[in-house]
Length: 561
Image 1 (spheres, rainbow, N blue to C red):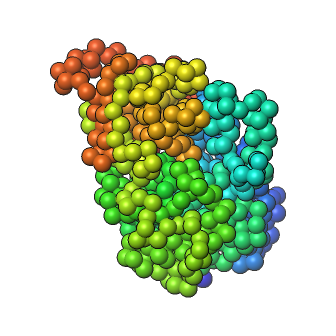
Image 2 (image 1 turned 90 degrees about the horizontal axis):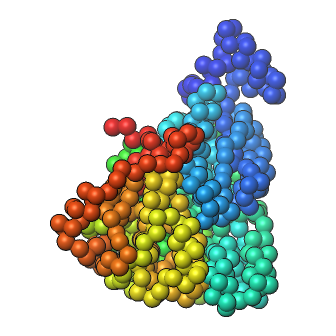
Image 3 (image 1 turned 60 degrees about the vertical axis):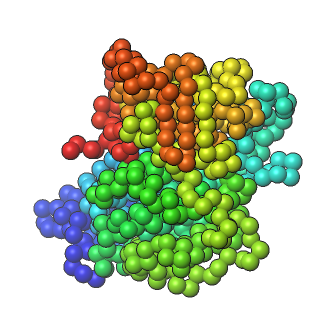
């Protein structure tokens, strides 16, 4: 090993003056030899808060054993997780995006304080991935990420179901299409055990993006939470970490602009979550790579949607796992010249080298379409601009809902009010539902609108109603939905001036989102707006609101330039 592989830990444990430090470490099990070898911090997001993370303590122990086998010293520490699925539609959801920053801050804090020479982070629920990667990027020490893995589907009436099935069942119950008993049956069957939400929702999207980025071991994104493959993924991380330390390979060597383009490309082909836009921008900011909203547009023009995966498609992540995960997809894209093969990864090899021996998908599989017969010839992630979103908005347009929508605004100043209106039948065919003051600053926290979008789908209005918001969407949301509207209402963005009955045009082909009123009227309405005042004066939400950037820049809290 190179001498610098204990660069950080030696400051903590070397020399007579560090005897107090060593004494403290002996109290948690350190022996004489442990002071001579690299220390590897294992950031665990284990918690009983959510099934996404309820098994990660066991994965952390496997990682620890893999580290020890390679003559490195493991140190497990915890960071937080929250559950979108539990808090969705409540005040608590305001803490969801905030948790991304807390996770990043806590990993940076512990690793920076304790002098770890390398870091392995394990994440399950969807804010874990970007939170961990932002923390690893800031530290820029030999690092890798392990995904906790996907949940297995629930089964009800011989059909596979998941958490989104429950949200949509709420809409069906409100419409009196199903009974209270049936709603309860779906509720009881949807979540059979540990693992992240089972479609190509945000967790599986971000895990796939991280693997494409090169920051996790091959296959890590496409494994069941409870499986031999996931256990091996954890054990093998020890050997990978030893190699990273020996070669001093750091996140800045891996998380390059080319690697981010690879991540965006894979995200698009899988039909991934709109949250990927927000998170990839934030991760790029953390590592110092220039990435902008327009990059998603440029890449999206050349990249098709190939994955027939929920929520817009038919299949679950567990079914993709069975046919080989995302590795054959990446090999297909590489062979077609759509990925940069020379990008370095946490294996110490390039992406091309990692994919060299990957086999093709089974011939009769229907989950991943061929390049010559895509689900959609270009990206489903569409960045829109116009007088309603001068700094951009992000739409998730699968093509099933059409490419253009024009309708009358029905305006709500919070998610809760909108949800009640949808369930009570106030939202009708031809409406554009506007949910505002839910942006990064205005929420604060930029809540996900899974409740409203699922209720709209459950009410059978998916093709007849559009929804726009300065908040964001769950990876489980589908329909004609546009989020991340910037500037947000709290920053006096045009979304704040929309009135009931205003005509709104959304054109995904032309990439336009416009309010059909004159420039003069827009200026007059903005002039009449009063300064937004948050009701949060203390605590983490107040701190977050005071420092968070626009969604168009990733909603980061450390953009001080």
